[in-house]
Image 1 (cartoon, chains in turn brown, red):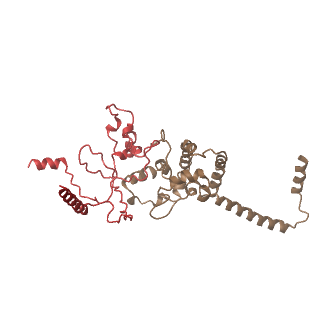
Image 2: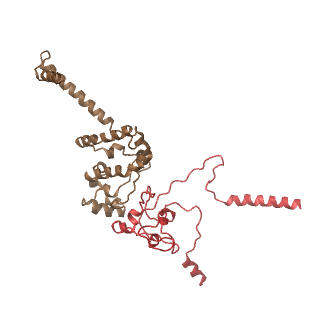
Image 3: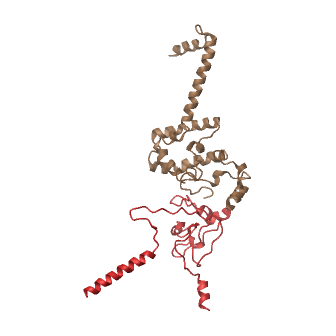
Length: 195
Length: 148
């Protein structure tokens, strides 16, 4: 076995005998493009709502809850899909999140939340992950659409102005601190700050 | 005797037909085998201004939008502002002290379970026009009229 590895290791480090330098560089370049394109296409495929709700865990629980909210249907017809809020848009952050999500593949295989009861008993823990993530990145996924710079306080209700012009403007609070449970049902909130 | 009964039945029937013409129904004028045109969904009033109470014990009405507020075994969205411990930060009116009492008048540490479901008494107001005229009179008005 070790000899076998050594043999191929030596071949890899020897100059090519039969292929021209041009073939290897150009060929390597084209192969690189194809690999990269294929990788990103695959990545984007997992970044669609159809992919998310192809699992019944997502389709029957969180997706149904989203459907009644303003982020699903509203007067102007602009809506948020699962990855808009749950996957960062920047490439490096996205890759980091996708690697974390391999845990979700594990959960799918072993059926961690494959019944309504199991999902409900995990709801608080799963919600806390998302609250923690959004708190840590200053509600980045909210802000991809809701830009504070362009918020017109004169068009908000008085209560909204009071909160947004003080706690949010100073950075003392971030969107998720007050806007929990706007897209999905809340878990038991006993002990959560502000509830 | 038989004739009197028959006449009485005819009279009653015609009376009820006459009465029916004046009764407004929620169906409107839709035929029995058709669905009536539903009225447009009324807009909630959300100006945060306190409304008049028609009698002292009237539960105050809600002057803001409560669409999608979750009130169930797990969580009560209303209390996240109106509970005693939340009212200061939210600058919301605290639910009255009666909500912290059990039915024997003992004070509890938190909201009494019998007062937990806010919408049983407190309701949102909309811009919908009343279907029929409201002839309710405030007690002050009644006293005023009777003293004349």
